[in-house]
Image (tube, rainbow, N blue to C red; front, side, top):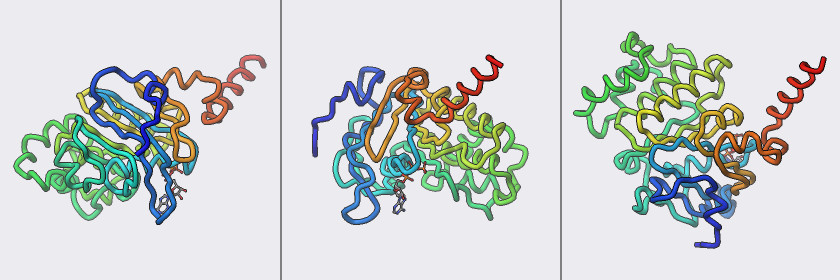
Length: 266
Ligand SMILES: Nc1ncnc2c1ncn2[C@@H]1O[C@H](COP(=O)(O)OP(=O)(O)OP(=O)(O)O)[C@@H](O)[C@H]1O
């Protein structure tokens, strides 16, 4: 395993102290001999909301899946509270307090909302009664519809069920894969606000997002990935205003700014 990474550069703006989750120089991929992650690193400190942004195919979702044991890590290491968890299976990670919300197929459509939440604590069913109230407080919209099948819900509602299910076992770390994908602009805003609200309850969050501008607005810090490597990192608002990041990765933001300036000048 290479240890040549300049931690200061790769994790710019990160708090000092022991990270909750530390991915160090990960190499990972799907096909033999083809690495999608080519030395990615990331730290998440307690209470942080950290974003992963970057162009299509940069490896953002692959990094998240590697953190959750769904893609084999070939080199590098992953620790949770200082304990080695590299390549632990997803069910073992859930037991240790890691939750994951996939981008698609993230609910059991034939089950009711309540049954979906029960699946979230299938390893510790006795926790259901205690946790369901806490989670429903975060998603009051779901409380009124507990007996409705998840398959009959809108995309935004399914996203809520998926987040609620992942929160049922009381994770310390929540991994979210593009929670705004496929939602209308209003629903996207709600998904970002909800993510922030979950984070404020004390859950540390890593969010992968295509909508880089909105992600940077809510994140404490973010990593920009490019071709399976760390390209930039820093506080969300700082990255939003970094000309290099705008030019290379926030094309839409640059276009928005240009359009706004043009409108002001007209
Ligand atoms: N199951 C898979 N099998 C083989 N290759 C895959 C698989 N999933 C993703 N890839 C490849 O891995 C690379 C990175 O994909 P990934 O989904 O991690 O990127 P991303 O940054 O999340 O992109 P996007 O924003 O488009 O979702 C791509 O070249 C993709 O084709």
